[in-house]
Image 1: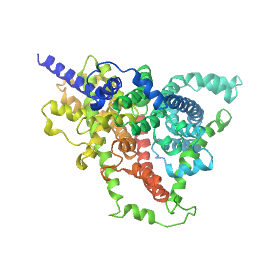
Image 2: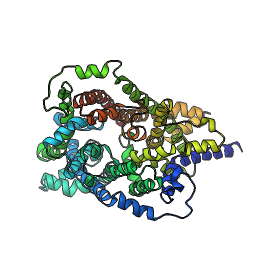
Image 3: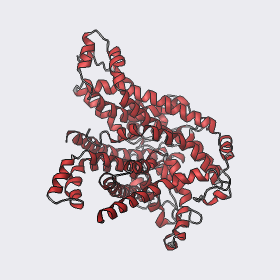
Length: 272
Length: 290
């Protein structure tokens, strides 16, 4: 009897916490379908008649087609560059541990903690003529993911048997062939993990475009939403619709790739 | 083997991008921090410690935001750790069913853009029409309703609350993995000796979780010191400057063209965080070895 009561209590607590975590997300989905008047208080009630045209309105007024394309471009290309370069580096640093290579490894992963100096980075962006360009923001995003990716992949390379490399070298494989034909395929799980985390991180990011992209046609979704909010503050139904379109891809990727996200998040923090 | 099989040029691409866009600006920062670099003149003059004097002198308005950043950081560390630990234990030891479902829901806020989270809570925390106050009033708890983001006393606690809501699931997931790594035999042996529940938590879970708790604390610390989006959107440092933090002030100085002061601030933050970063690496390697 006492045990069942306790079990019920535990379930009740978990349910309440989950409700608190889910309600704000539910709010934007339900308010995105309301009229302006219905959504003025951002309440939990369902809309009288679902206003599907809200989405068409924000896509047009918020210039979301361009913004969505930009976000997709930045996230995908930067993730590809960031994971590939990190994989190459992590592989060599993990396999060939000279004093110098260990120093380079620690220098790179110190970047996980290092804050960005946005002010002097502006100077670097100007000197390299990358400020206010799409190439520039992609390179910045790729670079920003490198420390974490190297950390993640380095640990994974340790688990691959060295005998593979030795066998390939005896067969006369060049370093590049060895990497791309033998190692790269084996890195797939960790590359997917790093890739998913990079994609989400870049999709959600807001500061780099805020500093370095002032042309609105280059803005990603986050900046477009923020700007849209500035213009339509009083219309929560449209702001909600805009938010829904921004987070829907994130939620879909999260539900599909949970396993990989959790693996990446817990590597390093927990043994194994 | 050695250099031939593992050539250094494999490392060069990643290293080059990292050095050029992250290390170089930080190093340049230490030079520009001692200058009057600004957007109004093209000349950059050496001004010694003037920027640092400005930042650390009392009464100039810079010290309160340092305090805000520390308050935010400490409060979110404590709240997230305590709540996440409770939830992690609940989902691993308390619940037999639905634990996975709850974990998926509780982690969800952590994958949402901070910007979006802030926008949603701007509406929820609206004093007149927001969901929080209307729910409190509907439940007969109207006396608890506050002018959350508008009241000087409540603005920072509100921001801390929103950040905790967003980040607690992330910390919980790491702690769950930590708890699952503890061998079950320990609990079984303890149960035979008559120790279960609270005592098992105190004498088995907590001590064995210490390395993981160290890591989550440092992760929270780094996150807290870099807080920007949430403050920028929820209050933009207001009311007055009651919720300004290091990064919002840097952005503010940057927008006003006072690059020297902004970069001096960045450099101070850099030194603090590199010191802490050293701790991350050390604690991570200790937990790997342990």
